[in-house]
Length: 117
Ligand code: AMP
Ligand code: ZN
Image (cartoon, rainbow, N blue to C red; front, top):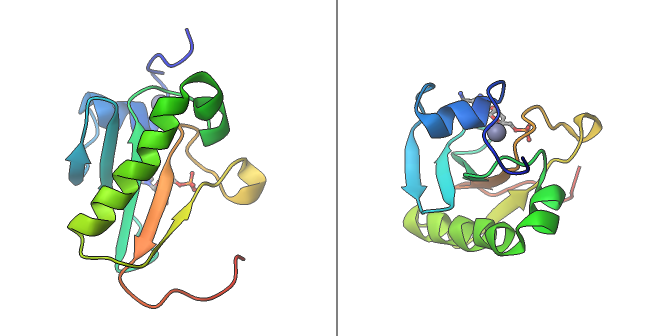
């Protein structure tokens, strides 16, 4: 069923507690935790509890939860003392997506390079 946990999904395993993560915030519908391979001084992932393969599929099925990824990312940034930050949704392997459970990257804590790629 759409949104149900997938046994072969890394982020579903983090949500289930079978793989450890450094959790920053959690709500009824979202989890924020530190990326294991940070690309900036602050690099946090915000994910929905529900399993969808990417952000667009999450938004189509559960738009309120997709919006909550953004409000949670803002709350995490505030909690980390970041006024300036970058949010990235990689979608598809060709764009660098390696975990096919919707997530947004929050990057900040140092001047970020200008430009998109
Ligand atoms: P993406 O490439 O957009 O699919 O992002 C997946 C992210 O998950 C990468 O930045 C990885 O460093 C991160 N990642 C992979 N395994 C873990 C883990 N066990 N805990 C935290 N972050 C992870
Ligand atoms: Zn999943």
